[in-house]
Length: 286
Image (tube, rainbow, N blue to C red; front, side, top):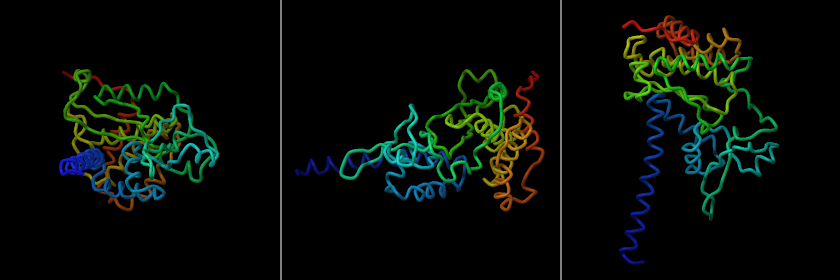
């Protein structure tokens, strides 16, 4: 190989490294912005959980399907008594001694229940009308909160909340700031409603920034445990009052040991729950 070819190949490898580094590090920084230092542990735990894959392939899964619970080939899922859904989206990983292989996430399959499949505190049950869900979502948009659904989440990622400094034009007339909630489209209606209440709780409690019209303050200095406890309390209140059963109490019991009572604002919780449940944004005085 000539010196030119050698440096050319090295340059391509460095470019590939930079592309991968940029994608994975950006994903980490986005998680760090909302989770704080917990994001570092979550990334490492994710790779540990997929010990049947190489570290590199586990990261490929993390980039393509954050929140993935389990992945397997079509054939392997069939061995577990599960079939792929018609709209299942494959995850691309590297194959030993070959180009690529395709695996599918648990949420893209139906069939025989897996051990512990429904034990996660993310999942909710109960009867909820589509109208209540839609009214709650539309009321949030009046506060400048864009509510989206994503089909790229794994079953263990229910949703996210984020604040942005620049808002799209279509929201400028409705609110002074812009926030976004993203929900897992693969979850059923009660679970999506519970997630929506939880993520709106984060926003209305000020965990991702203050409202420019002063309707809630900036409380981003709270620890992750404090913010999670307030948001989950909001979700529990709203869900209980709307006939949706959750495992929030168990989840709250797990994190309460890390939170001092004085670090939690009951007023912020009640005010946020009221905003979620009212399903209409109040008229603003000019």
